[in-house]
Length: 427
Image (cartoon, rainbow, N blue to C red; front, side):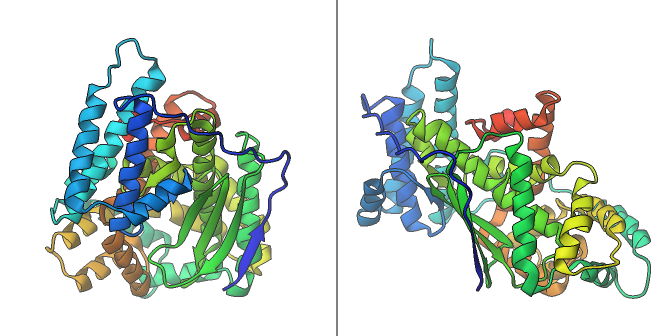
């Protein structure tokens, strides 16, 4: 495994995290927020991976590890938090306080739903997505996506199945493994430069980058607190040049790294709102996080700028010559229209209506990937279930909201990334 440490220049010294304000009363939002953090940390002890990030007081995490409540007690705790939040008066409160209470209610509700799932309750795909992420996806018949496949069939004529033709065409854009480090490093640097022109980043923000394997995902951002992230890229399968841009924006700038850094700065450091020091993966927060990370690709590289950067910068670094980047861009536009087909595929598989072999075949057909890559995607679906709605549906919802805010889309994006805006607020 290669490790590339990218240290960003410190313009000013990092500030120490301010002391958290002491809770004033059992019913205050500060006290409830502290108890919410305890609930999430204890659920994380019952479900590994549930807590995606935590950078609050270390003694709270130590307490959760030492004395996690059992599932029934945690369920009662979530119900108690909901009752306490509903009892908090909002008459005369400022808009930020009203939104804070609403945000906590939504996240406690999602935690309660996850606890029900951990206790054995089963939900339909759409019900689960709504309970955890606050948005109900439409599940269209797969036949609705067949016209898109027909368009791709015309774009890439030839012998063999459409999946085989797509794989053969895209083989020309694979980054050799011994060049992954400089190519992805260059992509992330460009994503950062484009983001920094519009969003003031914390002066001490930085990340490390490493290449890993045997994961159900293609990339992951582990936010560490103090404006630092660890970004991991799964190198098990071929990585194409456009994917270097996607990963750089999604995991880094203006994606997960920037989102978490801005939340930490805005809420934890400036306001002392401790609820934002913990990130439960199965929560409305993920809809905004994944949706904004995917929309961030289009924001940073609008129009054909991504294609031009691939051809002019990344291709030479990867040793790629003579590839048809314009046609690949058209393929990418069409493939994007297939994104929600996997919601229907996942619904059928998770409900037991369709077996594993047929599901892999469906994923290969409608995501236009090889069977081994489709099997990896099914592994992701088994692990994260309805979480998959946060990518395509999340991106489209975030994009529509940001672009409704006015012509300065970067300003709208920064507003979203520095807020407690919920998925329901985006609709």
